[in-house]
Length: 245
Image (cartoon, rainbow, N blue to C red; front, side, top):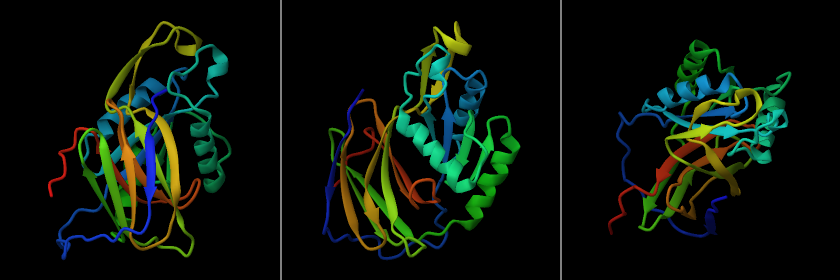
């Protein structure tokens, strides 16, 4: 497994732009696909996730769960904590079960992989409720080293959880040799390899550092605890331009 090095730095005063343009677009909506290489319906859902990610108003990630592994193929990206994340959404949304393929929209609603029309409608509904109360500034300092500054506040009296999802950007081909998809070569999109909890945050300036190895990208997620709504999200990659002083 590729490791991601994370350091947490407190007490840094942030400065930002004096004025935010009135026409600034709302932040992207986070779309999470819970998937498995052993699930017969999941390849089509991954293809749809890739098409969604072409939109400017979406950040798309796939989380491979491990409960399909019992059928004869161990998903190469599955981790038990990703299944735990899906279970947290099940509890918060009071769903009857966990399943794949499942899309979760900004931590606020969900749709099955065979419901693209419902998913698009929920993305549109979520965008109408977004506010710009949190600012995230990501700077790349070269060699995969980043600083991530956040400021503002969450819209509740409870602190949010700050996560970093490390993922492999783009398409990855997987030759499945066992289980329900045995003999198929399938494509997975933006597979997450690790999910780190960086800490709790409610308001005011904070700063984090991250070092991403070659081949990995990162998404910072500020979320209302396990299974809660996403308050802010930002995508960054090693290929970003180095910040100038």
